[in-house]
Image: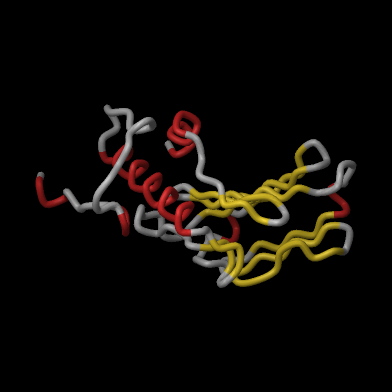
Length: 156
């Protein structure tokens, strides 16, 4: 479901020195630019439930404690066109209120504007899941959206 919502509504990336990262309610995506011609044998990527390590040609690109918990055995990485590493991490907490503020604890933080946009996006994704007959991909949201937006569950 997230894929189709993201496909229609775009992403809110957080730029980093090595590329960018972005998130949905379920996943965190990391895109790392590597030198053209990089082979998979030159990539060493370790994905844990709370940590990540990425080395390319023996050089450390990413290493540290993730901002949130992930499902370790569902994390994947791919090398695309020998110049881009795409890492996909599955969040353990898949609620709209679980908006990561940074990729690693204290590193690669989203600036306040990007953080605001990420939280808005996750809130709209939550609304889309709760109301599958509607299309929220182009919607604007204002007001109380922090923490996943207002709770309408008691209105049923």
